[in-house]
Image (tube, rainbow, N blue to C red; front, side, top):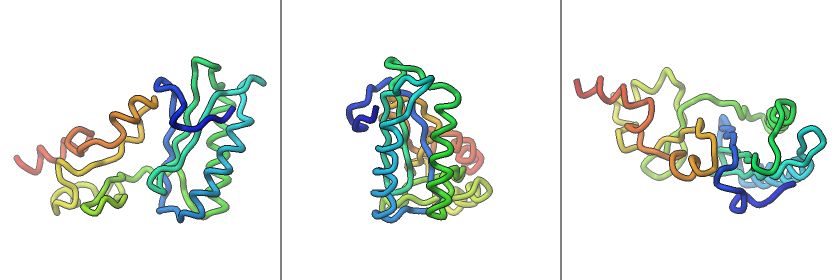
Length: 165
């Protein structure tokens, strides 16, 4: 059963899928409609899952499920992966991008490969206060409080220590 993202419980489990490029507004709108339809019929062992999904920054897809209503199964979780793979193939987008996403000075989402991070810090493209996205948060409450954090509060902090040493 699909419900709007702002209505899903704070303890809902989430998964964040990062697109390899910025989505157009048309693409984001189409993904939103596709997700609504897919999540409305999403089930685990024939029991409906209370869930939601939303596109943020035209770059991230967040899927949430209220586990207090019904627990998702491994197969139901796999379905979300397949949905994103199918949508990605249709749009030419990889939703399993593992690059570092951050907000630049104009608040635009930028990404860097892991190999580019040290140099970006050395060049001060990323500073300790740069907002980065932690796509490993696992609940809506964590997403609200820790998804966007200063770089020095993430695993990137080790590079800032090296820089000042």
